Length: 332
Image 1 (cartoon, rainbow, N blue to C red):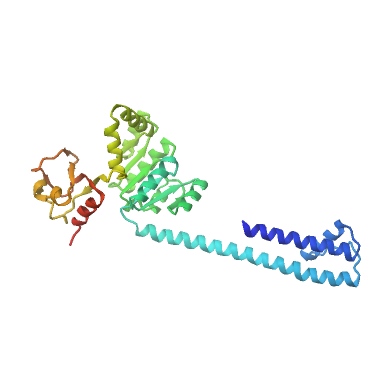
Image 2: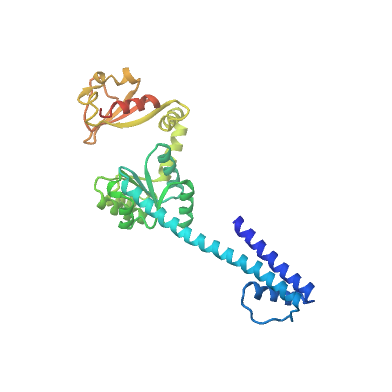
């Protein structure tokens, strides 16, 4: 922008210089002087309106050197900018394609409205890989400014989902503004990846929720219902609600609620009871819930409850201790 303003000011200065020069040397009017300057600088040469004296001819030659030289420089800069911009765009798309090809167990966020923006921020804060599919130009600009990976297009299009690597993704969030689009996105994503975990936004209509689940959504969320439910809980049980909010976010409290999947490499946990695993003793972590691979959950498990491969442990503890537990479960 600054460069453009400077270029315009320099051009105005050249036109003023030429016009005033013809007025002083050839006693021309301002209109004639400006006309002569324009046809000289642009090298058009429609015809002289001012009879040139020898001094006028020398002035014209100087004006040609200054004006035409400047025009050539500007034209070169414009050409370089266009070519370089095209190359940058092509390289950017190529680099993004390479990154997407390498991504695995990432998340695909469809829509970058108010809800999508919050989701992406939280994914970023938690160190999760994700790519956004958005079709609005202004939203794409905002995504690029934030440094997120984005694909421009319709998220309900199979090719866009394939390009986003949905077949290798861990989860998909459909938060576009239209219920119908969220249904199409869920349907397409489910057909491309049967194992994908899909969360879809709903306007709150019960029929829409049923359609989204039939289309393949694992969870259907109505922001209006969630917001109202949360506000009601803040009135009815404020201390409990505040504690849960702080524990989930991990801010201020020092404690955090987190879920950890037990893999076969976690030999210190697999086929052992909670007491034998010594999770509480070694890491000072409380196991609140054990969700079995089959889908059923064990709430407030006892010390004799067995931990199995594929279980998801919902734990409460300090962030660093949770990280230490996760690290201890890695192979080797």
